[in-house]
Amino acid sequence: MPKRVDHDQRRRHIAGALLRIAEQRGLQHASMREVAAAAEVSVRLVQYYFHTKDELLLAALGYLAEELGARVTRRITELGSPPAPRDVVAATLTAILPTDPESIRLTRTYAAFYSLVLAEPDLTRHGAPHPDLLEGFLANQLRAAQQAGDAHPDLDPELTAAALLALTNGLGSSVLGGQRDADAALRILTYQLDRLYVPR
Image (cartoon, rainbow, N blue to C red; front, top):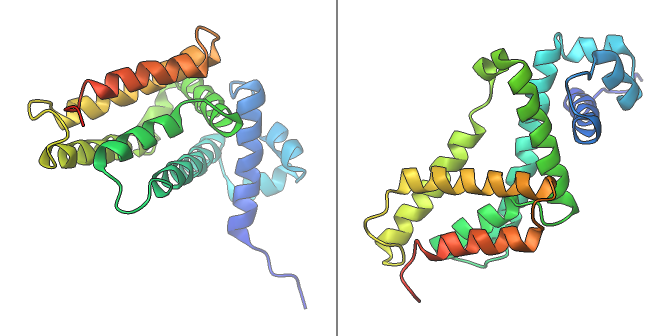
């Protein structure tokens, strides 16, 4: 009997090879041939599952977002049930900061995608809405914190969520660039978060 092929597993395997290249060398010169070599498959097989490089890039970005989402979910689950909205916000943002090998890998890989977009801006037209989803999630948590009396009533949840994500991404870049270490980045983030809430 012929062996049954798990096509989703193959797609993830190939996209995973691209993500490894992104982390280690960046994406500007990552060809389909290089991805095939990293995945230990033929170029023809890569092209069977991904007809263009852009298609492969966007699929890999989706899988990367899944990895980050799983990390955030683990951090929130560790808070216990039900977690306070302010703690959910903190857990989400600290999960994104590059403070351990997993988050450093994720941050480096995202940075490679951002660098590629600077060189190939047309990719933004096809990009996935992951940042918007994360901003919306954080805004909802901040709104819930206001309703619980934990967050200052005059803050704008949407603008605050966008600002917190921008701060976290900027801190992540500064850690990767050696401007500050992870502990310093975490202190800065915690300082900003504390200003949003009424004292416990």
